[in-house]
Length: 134
Length: 134
Length: 134
Image 1 (spheres, chains in turn yellow, cyan, blue):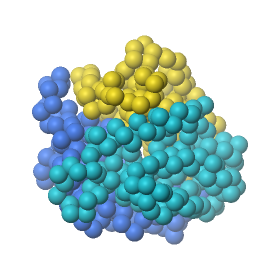
Image 2 (cartoon, helix red, strand yellow):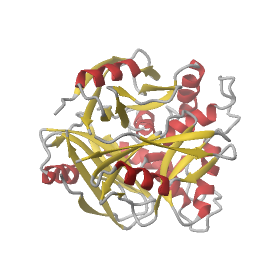
Image 3 (cartoon, helix red, strand yellow):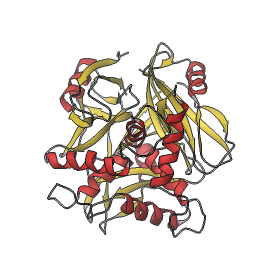
Image 4 (tube, helix red, strand yellow):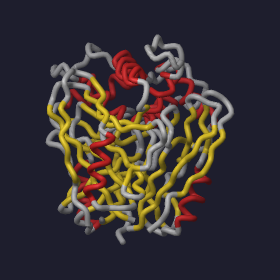
């Protein structure tokens, strides 16, 4: 039985994506599981997790930029909290992703990296990783 | 080996989100698995599952309200079924989510709850939960 | 311990959805796992995986048609690659989905099928399936 690995992510602006691939790799390595599935989980409701291209930084800019057009900060929301856009983006992007683990590493395509998506920062965030063998 | 737990959700309007956290907790408890991963699955194509804030009901209202702006009911769709918006929202929100299970409970952040998203109700719906140990 | 099954998907236009249900079923059967969870994974950053209706082909047309309105090909993006729309759609739809496996088969609702979503084809694509018992 493995345990849940947890790491911290410090975001520095309201909206950004942070490459957490190496942190997830490290958590999977620490689990000691060689082969199975990993659940990467974001315990926050104004952030999310996604898989995106790791080379062109403009792809990241376009992702958060266009999401901001589809779900604007000032969208005439009924909640008084002024972060309804962040909650909606969190549900669209998702808080949980499942990865295949082989040889103690997550199986990713050539261009894929794992990103923490901050939609209401700056904040101190956490990411949980749980790997099960099989 | 655990079995798939199933519970019913009765929706009462066309579009709404229903807190299913306690039902999922109960299904995980019934599985008898103390530690592992849980897959929560929606077997419908005009509904979905998401994780959102559990305190401010206006966040729920903003989520379904804004999704209705991005994917309007009358969006000039080619399907004659009049529920294409519901199908599209289902693919955006997703029909499956994976949770970490520790001490017989789903690991959730302080503000997180699990929601069934009805996009074409009112209907009788089902949710499936499968937990595997590891 | 099972291995990761991989199958090929050949897309023929820029944007389309391809029913991969029978390929996923076959991969799950090959794994030899009777009961557990399956992770279906897309190792590409301009494609995704979703669950949608299997009967009315217009539902597929409306899904990709409306996504193209929400995230247009020519959306004034900063990346020069001319496929930022495909990257954004990939993050919205998701690259990974988890299914429940019972009796050697994925548990799906009556109307559900599994789709590979091509957002920047035509290309040769791959899909990975990993099943773990439990």
